[in-house]
Length: 134
Image (cartoon, rainbow, N blue to C red; front, side, top):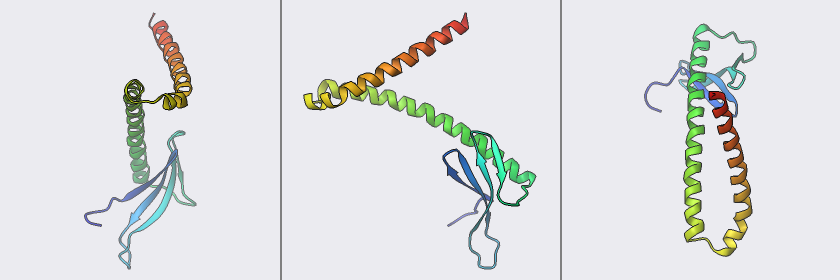
């Protein structure tokens, strides 16, 4: 590895991360990861690992990481939706120009149900927003 290593490493997991302090100042000159905390982003929790006491710096770094991670996850959510719109468009083009009867038979019912469900949710949510504006 080249360059300077960060002081903290976050091993991302489903709903947060394990937080490690990076140690390179040891006799073997090896990189050691010392777990200091567990983070749950959904609950906003920071739990020290074992009998550890977190420093103010630890907590500040972890909270900053949590805020950045939430922003990234929000961005990814909306990016996934934009990709879904693209997939719907390419699916329509495929169905119109390339799909065989057997291929259409295999996917039509599932697609129609999923699109009906999505349309129902979107119409209901739009109506709720319009009523809230009044």
